[in-house]
Amino acid sequence: MNILRITGNKWFRLSIWALLYLLWVIWFGNWWLILGLLVIFDLFITKKVKWAFWKKSYKEGEKRKGWLEWLDAIIFALVVSTFIKSFFFEAYMIPTSSMERSLMTGDYLFVSKLSYGPKVSQTPLSFPLVHNVLPITGGESYSTWIQNPYRRMAGFSKVKRDDIVVFNFPHGDTVLTAIPTEDYYTHVRIHGREQTKTMYGPIVVRPDDKKDNYVKRCVAIAGDTMDIVNGKVYINGQPQKFLKGVQNTYRVFTNGTPLNSKIIEGLGLSTQEIFYDSSMPGYPSFPLNEKEAEELAALQNVLEIRQNIDVYPPDFPDFPLMLFPFTETGDYQWTRDNYGPLWIPSQGATVELNLRNLPLYSRIITSYEHNDLVIKSDTIYINGAPASSYTFKMDYYFMMGDNRHNSLDSRYWGFVPESHVVGSPSVIWFSKDQYKSFPKSIRWKRIFKFV
Image 1 (cartoon, rainbow, N blue to C red):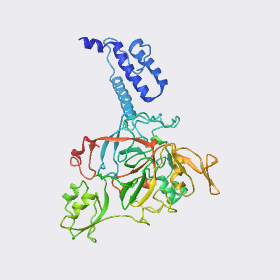
Image 2 (spheres, rainbow, N blue to C red):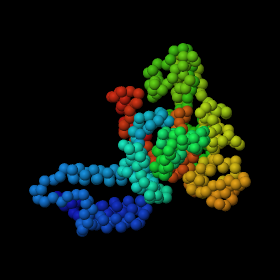
Image 3 (cartoon, rainbow, N blue to C red):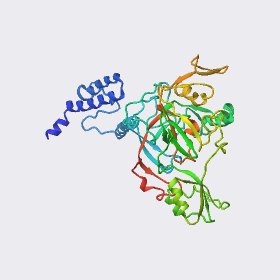
Image 4 (cartoon, helix red, strand yellow):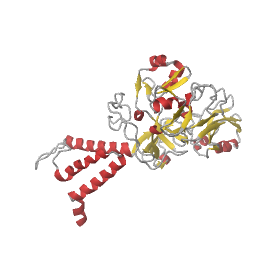
């Protein structure tokens, strides 16, 4: 009884909520918000202001209005869920197979923003619980009347090598409304700006925090030198450690009979996505990791397995206009399987700047770190002054999908800025197979699986 009396005391409740709010203000890092303590004091003690203005005060015996009760519940749910989405967790669905089989198409995730620290909203005027597009009208769900500079609150850690990371798509600042999931800049390089707008426009320009969310694995962090040799990733001269989910495609030659569907499903693959070519005979593009390739080679009806490796000049669609830095001059005769070496920019580091390496850093200088860049008579000008070097303001990362031959990643659009990092997948709360009907479509073994 004494415990109930204490917890029900208005001064006790004031103390608890004031402490929680104060801790949040310290975490948020804006001391002007400490004025909110006055609101909390009024809510529990003075009660001079009716903060929940939509609530109706009922006289004794007066019938309650159901729609007002529902309105109160909806407002409370929106406030709480928006707070959680902004600072703790956000729901996300895997739309493509670029991370197969680490993350499957149809996985529904909770993404932890605490992993690397939540970003303070750069575009605060936004429709609740919607990322960038309204579900019914298809219009943009936010207003850019207020734009805050990038700032990140404290998190548990920084992005590490081999982390699976959710981030804002670096090329997502300009979106073609007719094909919103495709890369605007790729189409501009191939078709030209005006023709691209004519074919697929109009365009929508989005701020950093309203770009579409992508999920990939961080293979290299700021300061690393990354190299891909025949499909194998090397970081600072050392091979990337074996990760079960990382896979490349192989040409699997058989004796004329296809593999048993149970074997394909046992590898976590869909028979609808594996093509058998009877003219080989075999599979021209079978996704496997190194150990699985060895095991498959031991099957009786498998005659040979060869890894698909792109060498220069690359096959379509991986021609120079597709692969970052979108030129084949100098040292950039790269393919998706033979790529680099490439140094990943880090905050405070300075590089010598010249026309030869400018394709690597031009987007960093202009789009991510907001400088004016002009080339006149073979001289580089940054913010109106001649520049022979550049010092980076942020850390950058190189992201790749685990499904290495079916992933549009940093090989195709370059570095991911620190300002674009959203969080890390924490748990799969639901998963379904798009090729199966309910209830067989539910992947029960993946539900509530930690990532």
